[in-house]
Length: 351
Ligand code: NAD
Ligand code: IPM
Ligand code: MN
Image (cartoon, rainbow, N blue to C red):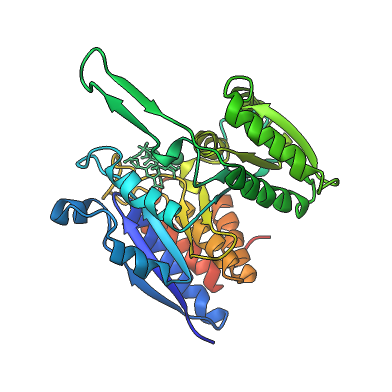
C-alpha cells in the first residue's frame, strides 16, 4: 500500500519540541501496522516571517493541500505582532482547508491531577465550529489610536455552516453510549446567531430522536464544567466559545499539556490537521519543559482519521499507562521516550 503523506508544521516556541515527540511515536507505530508515513516538513512561523515577510505563501498552501493529513505544533511568537501568524498561518490553514469541525475531546485519565474536588467520570468531546463566527476577520477599526476609535469584530454565521457542524455533532453523539448533545451559545443576548444555532439544532435533532438534546448559555456552561463536568457528552458550539471552553476543559482534565485536537474536514475535500490545543508557550520554549502528551494524543486523532484506529488506541493506552505512573518533572524527550517505549511494547502496560 502507498505511504501516507504527512505535512508537518512544527511552528514556533514549543511547537517543534512537542512535534518531534509525536513523530517519534508515529515512527514506532508505522511498521507495526504495515504502513509508512512520508513526511514533508514546512518551515512556517516566526522565523520565516522575519526572514521573508511570508506567513503562508499560496504555493506552500497548495503543496500542503496535496497531503493525506497535517500535523502542527503551535504558532505565535512574542517577536511577531499578535495575530499575524495566528491569522495568517493557523487560521488560514483551518479556513482554506475547510476544517469546519474542530474536535476537542476531554477525558480524565485515572491518576491525573485535577483541580476539581469531585470530578466524576469526565469524558466529553467539544465539537467547535472552525470556519465561521467571530474568527472570520469580519471587522475593522477607524480613528485608531484616538479617543474616537471604533473597532468591530462581526461574528459570521451561515445556515450552511451551522447546519454542517451541527449534523456532525449529532452523528458523533449518536455513536457514543450516552447519546447526549449540548448546544452552548448565548442566545439570550446574541439573538441573531444564537437563534440560528438553536433552530438548527432543533431541526436536525428531529432526525436523531435517540439523541437527548439540551442547551446551556456559555456562562452557565463554565459553571457546570467546573462543578459537574461528567454531565457532558458532546458539546456543539461556536468558534470562539469553543476556544474558551476547551482551555477550561483541558484545565480540569490534567492541564493544557494533555489536550489534543483535530481540525477536521469531514467531507475529505482537503487534508485534516491535528495539533495540541495549547499554543507556543514562549514562557517555557527551548527548555525541554513542555509536555508533549497533547501532541502525541493529537497524532492518535490523526491515525484514527486515516483509518488506523488500532494504532490510535495503542497511543491512548500508552499515554494512560504513562500518566498513571508519572511523578516529578520530566523533560519533553523523556516523556516522548517513555510513551514511545510503551507503544513499542518495551514496557509492559498496566491494565
Ligand atoms: P499557551 O497555550 O501557549 O500557554 C499557556 C500556558 O500553558 C503557559 O504558561 C504555557 O507555558 C503552558 N503550556 C502550554 N503548553 C504546554 C505544554 N505542552 N506543557 C506544559 N505547559 C504548557 O497560550 P498563550 O500563552 O495564550 O499563547 C502563546 C502563543 O501561542 C500566542 O502567540 C498565541 O497566539 C499562540 N497560540 C497558538 C495556538 C496554536 O498554535 N494552536 C494555540 C494557542 C495559542
Ligand atoms: C487554539 C488557539 C487559536 C484559536 C489561536 C491561536 C488562533 O487559541 O487553537 O485554541 O483561537 O483557535
Ligand atoms: Mn485556544
